[in-house]
Amino acid sequence: MKTVIRPNALVPLVVLCGTLLASPAHAGRPLVVDDADVAEAGTGHVEAWYGRLTARTNTWNVAPVYVVVDGLELGAALVRDTTTPTTGSALQAKWRITPVQEHGCNLGASVGASHASNGGGNATFVNAIGTCNSDFGALHLNLGGNRASHGPTLGTWGVAVERAFDQITANLEAFGQRRSKPGFQAGLRTDIAPGLQIDGSIGRQERDTLFSVGFKK
Image (cartoon, rainbow, N blue to C red; front, side, top):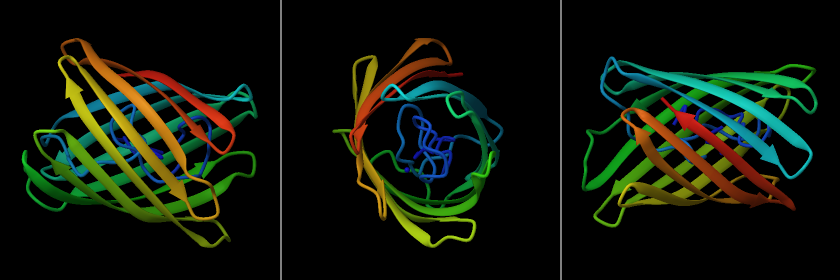
């Protein structure tokens, strides 16, 4: 589900470790679960990361995001699975429905579509997003649906907690899709220079180990 496929979520492709057309958007690296926050109008960023699923799938991912007006974020994602090989792409729009609250809960929603080459087909998705901020940290909740071409609509869900420890922010999350077993993941991120973040994650889904490392600029 982010994953997310903040492009963040981007994408129902999460693209986390090569799982194409599998889940909705993802929040800011290294989260898969999306959050309800949107940056200031006129700002944007690019996330890039390498993902690995056990020893059999390798992906390279790029996801730019731009906030066109207050509360509306547009994002795209491109993923290349070098093992298959397969190329996937996605577009997403995310709205912040409620005003930002540093202490309290915010609501958001996203919609989007993705495409995978080599017969992977197309998919559309929608996601309802809730984020609650407190002195402890942030809690993110996702509930949505993902529909592939000529297939049924599959419900998706995600829950994540993140907390800052001095210069490092840690997160734990769980996410899943109907007819599939849930995935679990832990991640860390930190700024190494003004406007430059590095991050990484490790997790488990089915019997596979998920690993990713990337940056945000």
